Length: 407
Ligand SMILES: CC(C)(COP(=O)(O)OP(=O)(O)OC[C@H]1O[C@@H](n2cnc3c(N)ncnc32)[C@H](O)[C@@H]1OP(=O)(O)O)[C@@H](O)C(=O)NCCC(=O)NCCS
Image 1: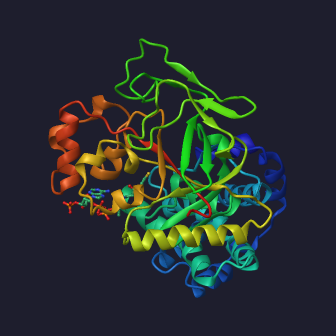
Image 2: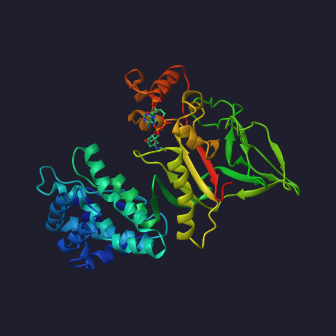
Image 3: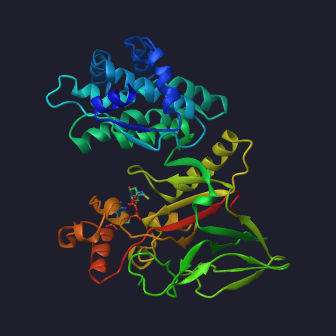
């Protein structure tokens, strides 16, 4: 039955909760989140402002196509069952409408209804944990922005896979949008580092479980020859010392020989399996030092209150912002440079493709796809990246860490 349903919709779902969700979904007759009354209530709360008409039309269509409605119910229950437990979907392909279907808007926007069904509960949960109303509103009203952004990209209104997954993430992994950034609780195991801090608050990063090239970059990164095996970075510990491959805070590259630090001077602040916040910087909006400094502090405060039972150690980020070549390229007054200064940086294994997506809006998956001469040159960053790239310089994404209670 389920197999036929997915086939009929050209959709795929893999989830640890699929079977249970399906069994619940087939018993769900006329669920509240597929009623016009509920949708109008959502509109009244101003969570959706721009796409009301589109969603009204889509809902009518969903309720006309039985399998589509069942699909929405399955998504709703998977989110419900997976709430707060990490990844609810291991694979998801959303339905596509048959050619010339009169319900194509319904197919394109169906997944939005599964998310909207969770809105009031999610809002309550945020409020109950003391998150202030404006942050709650910013977080949940992103659905509208995402549908609109989806429509620009796809040329039609759509709650696409990216929107569903990233937005669904707010609900099932408890991501919160605070002013300029998106914060998500995650595990330090995802980052290849140990972090040490001394009594005056200086930070040292030691690499973990990666191969270090003699250049200080990581083996496997763009531009690093794969002929030499590299040195395997791991922590060794004596009674009074830690030893391993540390990052030079001036160059942000790894010192390619093992170094020792004293336990009496340095505490091990972050190791694998601890709680950290992952931060994402979306497009748009003011990005001055004043704005992001306030947001970083606010993020720390809100997330500590939101997860009182967690000992969150700090904020982790990965971005093209942190790549070494920007240092000589951006002016010292640049906002991106000021943002970098809030963190301690380290290399990651990276192919350096993000800069083309986020600076030139020209996403690539291989350098063969890149026609560098066609890239725009209308500001200092674009000109600089283009010129350096032509000279053989790459822009691998680097990692960044900032401890909580930063001094
Ligand atoms: C975050 C962001 C707003 C910073 O922009 P900003 O405040 O202008 O940053 P800076 O002051 O450092 O800009 C320096 C120069 O680079 C240009 N620039 C900065 N970010 C740019 C971007 N993403 N695309 C194109 N040019 C950019 C600026 O226009 C400026 O040019 P100028 O010197 O000719 O005036 C901007 O980069 C952005 O919107 N990024 C998209 C999101 C992103 O990249 N997230 C990270 C994903 S991991």
